[in-house]
Image 1 (cartoon, rainbow, N blue to C red):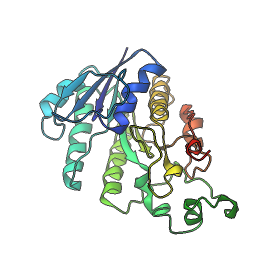
Image 2: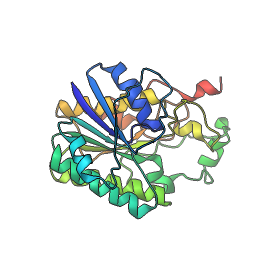
Image 3: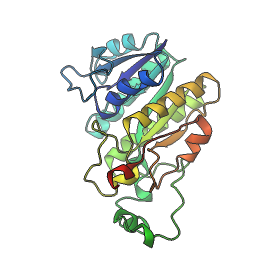
Length: 262
């Protein structure tokens, strides 16, 4: 049994993990800790529905109780403003250190932690890619490396950078943590009306494959703790490095955003 706690598991990413992790391996036992009354974004009736109501930013005792005996913790919750979000991140990571230090911690970062490298798709070749004029892009840019250090330009990116720093702190203390630079994930697994969304799109099943790959690699002793990986589907017109997680943790995404353009 893989005792898993999703902190913020009713959202777009968590609802997918609740749906697809048990399909990948039936030994996942998933509890989702969320704010009281938080809406559930899961669209599949088979998604895990073991819920726990708590505010991770305020109820430290309840959070620590929820962490007892966990093998895997995925931190998905967020709030505004930035200083309150970072304070919650402090509480969550410190609680994991104290209560379940043997667990694998996956902290939610985002492609937006590296916004300055490509966003808002106004510089070349990204501006041309955004218009889907692929025949005019020669050569195709090297994928943005998974080793790229954070370069945020918004408060959202800054909060994700803070999560990545905590994952590095885990590494420095001999604990296992990975930062997931999630791409564009939504509960409908649909294409969204956002600039160049097809480059960042990630199917919920691929997000679950990433988490499972991290856990399996951690159990085998091969995880590079403190790493930050882009979590993107196997998109034909990808601009992000998914070869590094493919090589290091065996991440094998199976979906492609081009299904929306066929």
